Image 1: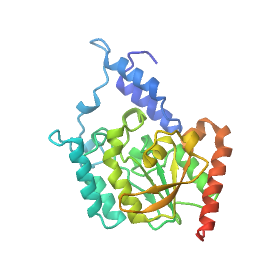
Image 2: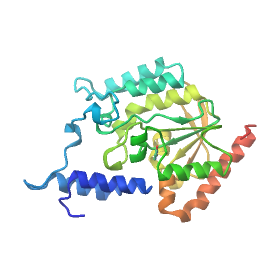
Image 3: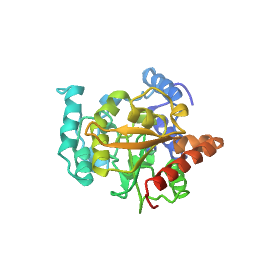
Image 4: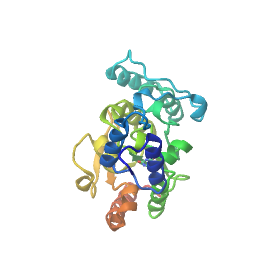
Length: 279
Ligand code: URA
């Protein structure tokens, strides 16, 4: 791709990669975006994300409001906390997340992607955040990576319809499928905590480094986090064993690591059996 490729071309390319289940290379996309923004007059430059105007008519009809500049990041985190605390069911939490305008990613994507699966499930899967397909459809893990996730879960008797709840640590698709940034994850965190408090799963599977590191508040990478269980604790006192696992999109690129993911799945299965959970 030429260095002055347009933002539209970059988006088309990353959407295509995403549809194939391959996340965009972060460093390469950042470099291409930068080059496209610095393109000389006459060459279409990528719009800066904060300046992108979103017309609700073109975004699946979801109500969109630009993140108010009069509030600080601390204000937004407090607002997320208050909204999350006032939700007394997973359904009302979903509505609260959809109403929340404090994540800068919201105005750049199509849909707020909250959860899918069985609300009272013993197993909760938490991923990194929506990709292209998820943003179009409004449900987590529905692209190629999601299809692999479904197959992995099925191998130990888990599925969305009966015993598994699926969500993410971020509810809005980052542009170009880059990783969500710390401030974006921080405003989602009160909702993630409340989701765990309300769902009370017996076990959490964290898929991929971003989800595992965010949930455990650590810089340790997935290579070292996977392979054993760690407690996930919410400020309200819920404690759930969590098994970090490779992200299915990573496994699509590195199928040779599937045996390690299989071992992690067997760990989940053994822990469920130990806890007397029939799946
Ligand atoms: N990857 C994720 O981490 N979550 C999704 O919902 C889809 C892809």
